[in-house]
Amino acid sequence: MEEVFAVAAAIEGRYRAMVLLAAFTGMRFGELAALQRRDVDLEGRFVQVRRAQAEPQSGKLEVKAPESEAGVRTVSFPASLVPEIKEHMRIFGEDGRTGLLFVGPKAADCAGTTSMTRGGRRSRGAGVKGVHFHDLRHTGYSLAASGGATTRELMTRMGHSTVRAAMIYQHLVGGRDQEIADHVDRLIKKSKKVKRPEGDGDLPDSDKIN
Image 1: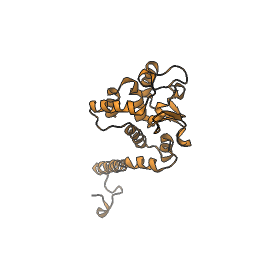
Image 2: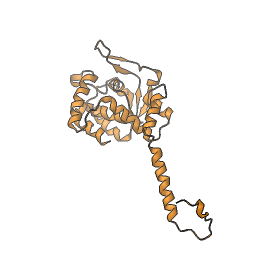
Image 3: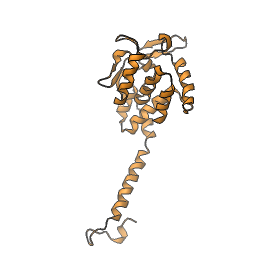
Image 4: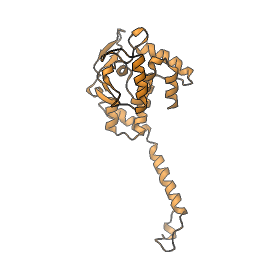
């Protein structure tokens, strides 16, 4: 969490909200770059993903529908981001309902190669090395998985039509099972410290927990 905010603070102001949305929703760069004002609901705290920006081999940016039907989705974002996004829209967003939320300098398209090369240098300056934009997406889904999201919920949030990726994120946070076992262990140790009345359901010595 601290690293996310360190990168957001170091990167150019027009990309700060993009970094935070990527990290806390898991949206792809192309999806964020294609967002329009009408796609963002600040009151409902969600984003409508309807299109994505792509940079084919020709080098000319294209905006098209997501790669699969699963890519068209509604993604909720934390309430803490509302002031950030609202301020970003006021300062950097294009005007009008179809105005782009994220634009590069001099109203240029928010090209991934340009913005993230700059962002990579500044993230190193913030003490966070080796960060790529896609790493923010990983962060978003690891956080969702750690919050107990089901496989289906992760698939919907990620915009995936197969379970494979969702299962990977659930596996990454599988260490919580050990935390549960540790919690039970603490309860066991606590119960052993409680002195029970003699003959009140005492177990034979051979059956007691050591």
